[in-house]
Amino acid sequence: MWWSVPGEKQIYQRTRETWSYYSYRRRHYYLDKATDTCPLDQALPISVSTAPNSFNIKGPATEFILLPPVNTLSDFEDESTWSTLSEGFDNAINDQTILLDTFLLPENMCNNLVEGIQNGTASIVSDGSFDAASPIRPVGTSAVILTPSTECHERYWTKGCNWVTGPKSSQSAYRSELAGVISSLTILDILVRHHNITKVAETIALDGKTAMDESRGDWPLSINQKCFDYLQVIRAWIMLSPLTFHFRHVKGHQIDKVPYNQLD
Image (cartoon, rainbow, N blue to C red; front, side, top):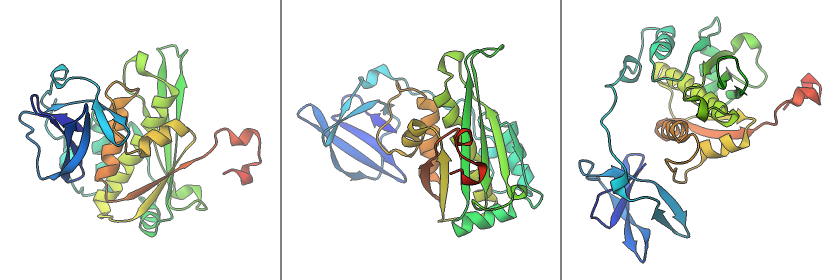
């Protein structure tokens, strides 16, 4: 997220637990050094574009209005642990700010999945669907499967799915793919917090290459770009997570061309 203070010739970027600021020289902003803070009481969010070794502000800071949070921390966001794993999932389902509508847990309550995450063998596969001619309106959905390993039995899978939020004009196959990533991160967040998982790697496989590239990217986002709201959630969640994420592109509709046992 980028910020600017009107009247100052500096812009600020939040990077994990620290801030970096860029100073204005010759019509561009160049990295100066890290700073401990940013004057948030005066700062406004801005949109930036990249230039060779520097950044440009795409719009004056005065065009943006910083609004207070819509609500305080929800029960899901405020809780670090739950008495049971199901309680964490139920809180996510009941929270309107969390993009997860249904879930299905294995009989062993994800114990194999947690072990796979801790061992670095777990994988996540998500996919999105978009129907422009739906009877209700253009609508998208997404589904996700988390597995302890690529060779485990289906009875150990954890599943989730959701409707894609947003007005009909924003619905697309691309947005549905991003919704699947958010569902994946939601389920992982519940497991990580409930089991205190730290410092392991996780692989997320997608058949949408654009969604994959934008999700794992670290370049600045523009508030005018497509699905900015979803991308901001995804990147912030990845940055704040104790896990290390690897993304993998998997070609879609392989079952139409190759036998089931040869699927990627």
